[in-house]
Image (cartoon, rainbow, N blue to C red; front, top):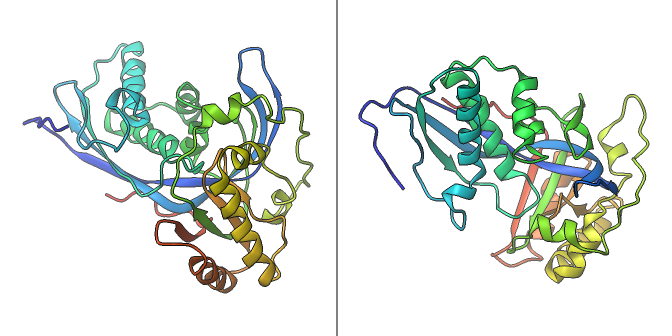
Length: 303
């Protein structure tokens, strides 16, 4: 949809990165239905691009439709509406905004693309509307949109507890990961609702100064549910395991991110990653996505 504001003002934009859950342990289920988690977030240089242009008429518009997502259910739009409400709660009358998201992160992949887009909208609107909200303020509002959104507000690799909102930042060197994305999307709600989901794992024990490989000692409790529901995800993991074995990469490193469908494997350096990428690419057809990524955080501001 497109609605041109003749009084449109300045534009801000930034990269909205994807994430990998290096481990995801489900510790239990709370009375409110949410699950207690122990997880690690690695932000990666696979990014959407979020562009916001100030409107003077108070309206919030998504300038381009996202395939399969109604505007009312689009997290980026919901984030803008929540910020507008926060603006009203502060006694201010905020202008509107045009929202454009250039999607590169696959949907239904467990890579957090929608959550990251929402966080970028909130971060940019905080500047565009001169709200002066703190990172803690934004994180609190972000949690209302989804458990993954606060980590993208903070823009740091992190250990997550609770529903993922209690974040402990991780200062770690650049690492490389190979991602394999089969051509399907997975419903997160369906996975968490599965009665066979393990809900009694223990938190991962890590040292005070962990490295990336320490988080690879954990596992993803959602993986067993998804591979049972979607055989193509199980197939993707087997492809990674086979090629990882040929390169001497630990067999337990291939795993699923979040609720899938993307699976990934850490590699020990970029040269090994490029070799791994070639092997995997030759094992799948053109409809599968194979991408070598790094945890080196990109330049957020694009314009």
